[in-house]
Structures are given as C-alpha cells and as structure tokens.
Length: 65
Image (cartoon, rainbow, N blue to C red; front, side, top):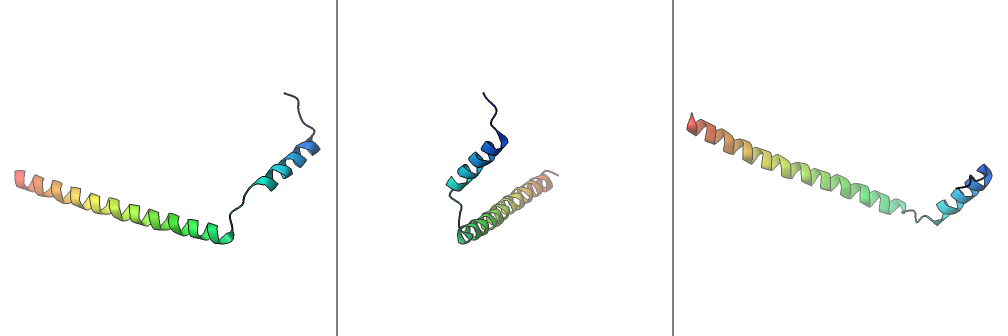
C-alpha cells in the first residue's frame, strides 16, 4: 500500500469528516439524559435484587443456626 502525501491525507480526512451525520445538540442532550435514566434504573434494579438475596440468605442462615 502506497503512503499518501500528508497534505493529501489531511484533505481526505476533511472530506470524510464532512460526510459524517453529526447529531444535533438536542439529540445529544436527550441521549445523555436517557443514559443517566437507564443507569439509575439498572442501579435500582440490582439494589433491590441484592436486598432480596441478602434478606433470604440471612433468614436461611438464622433458621439453620
């Protein structure tokens, strides 16, 4: 593969960057908000599961003791 001239390379990079469909500011904000909401819901779900398992194991171990 032949090496490209640095100037040619930069021109090609600029050309390719121009083809990218960049999200709007609103889309970025909504996506960020959704990531935080989903992370909070996931954390809450696993917290509840942890509490249920811990309570079940504690009850079982106290019963066997």
